[in-house]
Every structure is written in C-alpha cells, then in structure tokens.
Amino acid sequence: MTDHNRVQLPVEHTLTFVASKFFSTTVVDEGNQTVYTLSTERKQMRKVLTSVCEDEKREAVWAEIRWRDKSFVINGQSVPWDWMKVEKEGNSVFHKRPRVWQWAGRQYVVTYRKKVGWVVTEVQSDFRVVGTLVPRNSRLFSESEPAICRVWVQDLYSDQAAFIFLLLYSETRRIKSRRKWRMTVGALIKVAICVVIL
Image (cartoon, rainbow, N blue to C red):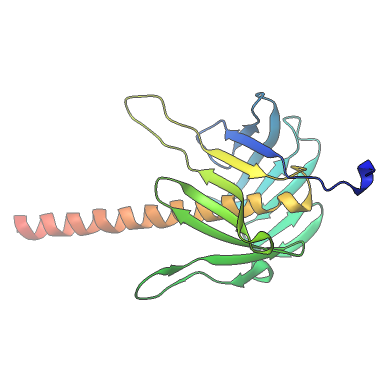
C-alpha cells in the first residue's frame, strides 16, 4: 500500500490554556509550544471579536469568533451559528437534550458531564469522542488548574479541527449561565435578609 492511499488516523493533542482569561491567552501543546493565541476585542464590556492565531506572533489568523454577528470565521469562510446548529439544546421533564452541530460534512454532539467537562462526539463515527474540554479550576489557597483541551484530529489548523470552537462557545455559555444564576441567588438572599431585618 502506498503512503497516499493510507488512511491517516487522528492524532491526540493535549492543549493547555495558560492564562485564567479564557479568551485572552496562549494555548500550548505537550511540548509547551504555542499552538494558538487567543485575543478578544471588547466594546462596552461585551465581547465583539475573538481571534485565534496560529502562533504567538499573531501573523496568521486561523479563525475568528464574531460574537455580535453570531458566527465563526474559519480559514476565511464565515459560518453563522444558526447554520451550524442541526438541533438546538433544550430541556424536557426528564433530561436535557444535547446540542447537535454540523460542519465540513460532519455532525457533532456537544454534552457537558459533571467531573468530566465538555465532550464532543462525532455522529458519523458511531459517536467517537473527538474532543474534550476540562474547564479551569480556580482555587483560593492552592494553585489553580488551567483549562485543558484534548482533541483527536490530524491537523490542528484544518476544517476538521473547527469543533474546538464548539467547546469554547459551549464553555462561554456555561460560564455566563452560572454567573447569572449566582447573581440571582445573591439578589434573593439580599431580599430575604431585608425581609427578616424589617
């Protein structure tokens, strides 16, 4: 069998988000080499554009997340989020339905599992795990654990690696939802204290 006929198997990559700010950080591989550099522009405290460059020099932009336009730009191609969503997440009485995405002729299911983090499976390969993201574990009195992303893909800059953005997008939604929940609980506690005092 010649080399060009040989099927290329996915390669496991372990990527570490160095800084605590998820969208303003370098991402390094197992050899501590910079794979991606993420930088985010904000206007009026809101994320507008997150650029993902191929190295720390930021000379080559691999992809972008356009928050205001609700789209990804991957290798110069703009893809609206709504176009990628095959099935939106939702809740029923008994379970939460995961979100299904499509990109580059593949479909991906993104789920969040406690004590595991985010998991992306590929529908076409019998739901084989192609990526995971363990969120950053911040601690007050000991060293925090950085966010760790593991992906199984041949080329980290190919269209097939674009599901990494689904992990970033999903974690952003989770953080935002958790922040809103904490603010709501905090407000309810303040109201309860005021009622007791008065």
